[in-house]
Image (cartoon, rainbow, N blue to C red; front, side, top):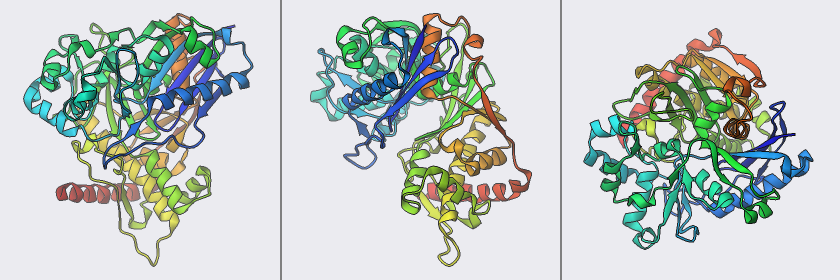
Length: 497
């Protein structure tokens, strides 16, 4: 009997899955907290969470899952971790956190990334880092250096959020090449940490964690951590990856030309390439995928809209308080395609990479108080997200990445017929929906990293496709017209900034 624990550290909750290694199915899953985890915003554009809260959520969710599954804890053979990307966690020599984590949607570091881009130069950044330094982990660390020097002087190591959870489990501060690339530290030409970037941002090389492979033994559960988690000591961590590379893994998206998507708190389209295909304006990103090797490159080409699920949740609270998401989706379906001329720009969750790191905010356009009701607003919110996906996919296609077939988990906004049909229609793409999630992907990663499965083909035999969403010819004209209107409003809003 062999089970594998998958941990998904998101910004709204920590989810866990206990996967049966024989069948590949989830024996139990749980998440905590039951309401969305708080994101603190001490100033406009900031977003922070306390890493110690993540550990509490993990313990709560794991205890629930173990109780539900009823399996002996010693049956768990390996652990996999996935996590919200681009965050910054700082610890001192005693491995105590020095400040709250600056998480992915925090915008304060944009000027630091822009300054580094000017200093290092366009060619260096796109050829070596594959991106501009932007608002990623490296720029956030530079912000701490300049604005909180007392804290910076005490920093022993920086980490990404998943590295922190692994550290709490093993007592070791480690990371991966994939993680370093998402933080914007990795030089793909030199195949090592970028020394010019460190010098530019004033970051000592000693702050870089030890590197371990994405798959394989990365550390072992200590006795003290095991006691807190209700597990036996010595279980290996055998996989870790950021949430978007891991989402792609969970959908068996590993080879050039394959594309995954997710629409949780943020929304992402993530394609795999074996060639560098950067956008000159760096509106899309490239990172090392989970199976990237210097000799066999596998690069994730990513578009992200920050405010996806968070906008959908906000709109539901405003106009459908007390209703379920299923009822809210039904409400959206009552309005006509194109939302009767109402458009929403869904950019109210920080600076947006596809908008060249601008922070334009969300806005609602075209409301007529005499004829429009809540259903129109619900549909316009979901159509606006679909149009933001299409906007990013257009940029991806300009770099040579095809997005005609997209795999996604049957979850979050992909549960909405309005959203998924609008996206398929406006993007002229086929969407394949699968019964999987991030925590399940982390468990599969742990099984691969421990050697339980010898190949990805073996690991993904149980992956089940639930549905296929085709473009809707009857809606195409309305969707195309609405998208054109939405793009013009976006152009006007950008011009005002």
